[in-house]
Image 1 (cartoon, helix red, strand yellow):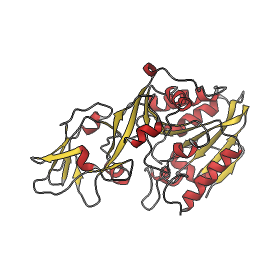
Image 2 (tube, one colour):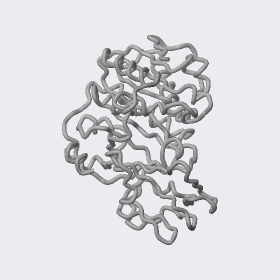
Image 3 (cartoon, helix red, strand yellow):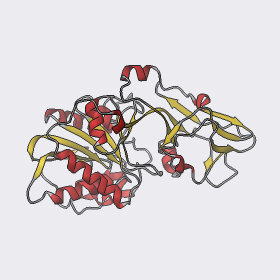
Image 4 (cartoon, helix red, strand yellow):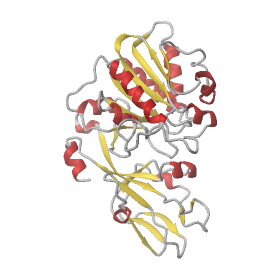
Amino acid sequence: MLKIFDHLPDGLLEARAEDLKDRLGGPALVHLPGRRDAPLFTSVLLHGNETAGLEAVQRLLKKYAADGLPRALSIFVGNVEAAHHRVRRLEGQPDYNRVWPGCADAGTPEHAMMRQVVDEMVARRVFASIDVHNNTGLNPHYACVNRLDDAFFHLATLFSRTVVYFTTPTGVQSAAFAQVCPAVTVECGQSGQARSVEHALEYLDACLHLSEVPCHPLASRDLDLFHTVAMVKVPPGVSFSFDDRETDLLFDADLDHLNFRELAAGTLLGRLRPGSPARLQAWDNSGRDAGSQYFRYHDNEIRLTRPMMPSMLTLDERVIRQDCLCYLMQRLSPTASEETRVAGS
């Protein structure tokens, strides 16, 4: 599946995301030289409707077209099929950010392709990895890490002081690269916003100019760290809506305004259709449905049982079906050990 280039493919700098299927012929890994040899790796369009990474890379390469890049850069352009249709992924496709080394399943051509990408970058002694995303709800720009490590914190806070540590879902790009180099995911707000592209561009440019990733401890005042403890899903077969009272679950039309707000126990999240047995799932980091620990149902209302901070709440019903309703997070001390925190999650 993978197309590999050691030069800039013709037309890449001008192409729209929906044109890349024809321009590249499939997912592509592009290696470009720079004044420092160890390459920065970045992945874009792992989800076909998240275009900030592509647009930022295009602007970055135009900026350095005359003088050359300050560091070698390797770019993985992911789900061009989905981008052609302007969707996260096509029905029947795996999620391109769930098939990297480290996931439970490994039987598709996409799994093999991501293994090939990682092997290529290990052979090139990758310097650091940046996975660029947009999201569909109202969220601040933030970074995600998969290791509680000072180098990872430094790389993340170069983008935002708001950092999310997560260990599930598995099979994500940043977790695969965390085994070989400092790696972060950056969430750049919603697609189509100029600031999303500008922020991604500024960040990638800054990373290209790093001579090394600092590894000394980061001052706690410079970091707001949160830990994802559960992924909330609407079960298959349960109907939901943001405006139809006849569905099993009715959520508020402004639900995504709750993202990155520390909510008190008892906060109202939605309502049940009278008589419906529907329940939200909340998959914890051990793979168990812990929904009863986080939600209570009384008088047809769905409320939190404990203080929580949601992220990535979205009103996009297709994304909710393909991925999740949201993640639940708790504040975490940067000095907590990874082993201790995971054991207590």
